Length: 183
Image 1: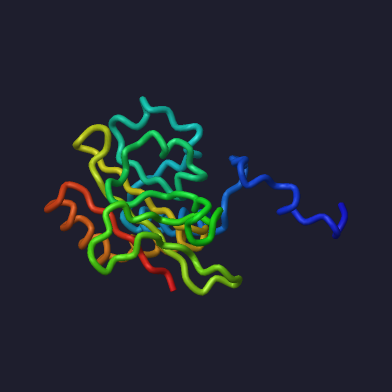
Image 2 (image 1 turned 90 degrees about the vertical axis):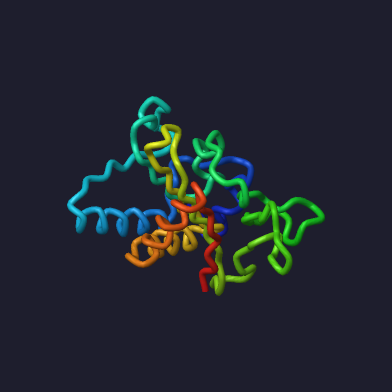
């Protein structure tokens, strides 16, 4: 071990480390477990890489973390309005992870990026609630542009009024996507 070596010098931005779980994702799972415990409901926690598609057919699913780390999410059609994407050359802040608004309306931003400087002063999260592969089941995605955004998304859906609003919107639209501004 040398204090001269920084992990960012060793870690590739192209390689996905599937042995890593961010603090925000861990805290998000703790919050969801607390809520399910209050509701006297069980929850099975599993790394998305170990989830088989057969297991998903007849279950409600909650995915915690962005598709950049949850590779299984890349195969699910989760949102028609927002996607996660690394900014490309010519975009603002190339290399940074953003939530991209695929169909921005007048006055809406095209990209949602966490603050550039540390400590973070602003982050964004995507909350998607939609029918699952089996229409009687639901899929919930809670994902931030950083691990802190993911934690905030779980905190948001753990509030009674937030869940009621999501269920009501899902009934009207069949699916709902929302971008949260996480100050």
